[in-house]
Amino acid sequence: MDPPQRLSLSAGQTAAAKLRVKLATGYHTNSNTPSDEYLIPLRLTWESAPLAVTSIEYPKGQMEKYAFAEKPLSVYTGDFELITHFQAPANAPKGLRTVSGKLRYQACSKNACYPPKTLVVQLPVEVR
Image (cartoon, rainbow, N blue to C red):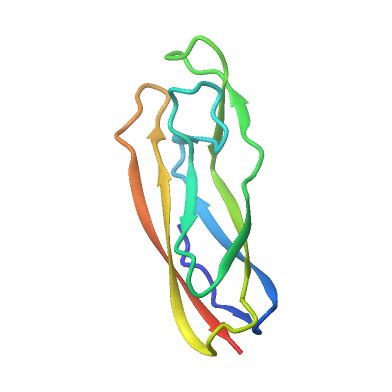
């Protein structure tokens, strides 16, 4: 995962932050909308202060068939982006701060899935 670039916005404004995720060759994660309820989805969450999250865009999952599953799975492979839309409240304090997030995922190869992990994401934010 590449560290996110600084997000700069004015009080009352909305802006989008991109998080670039890179999976090693031969690995995949379930998409944010996995094919079965027992599969662990990729999920990005953020602390709310000082910004409000208005939406998170996930890429469309690719349907792929693996020997360990009876039917194709909705997965992400390679490099992809997650885009979060933030809004700064009208009374947001000005200045530079960091908004923390968490990216939860489960990496799998063609042969096995590994225990889920959670990565901490630090987004530098400047409210002008």
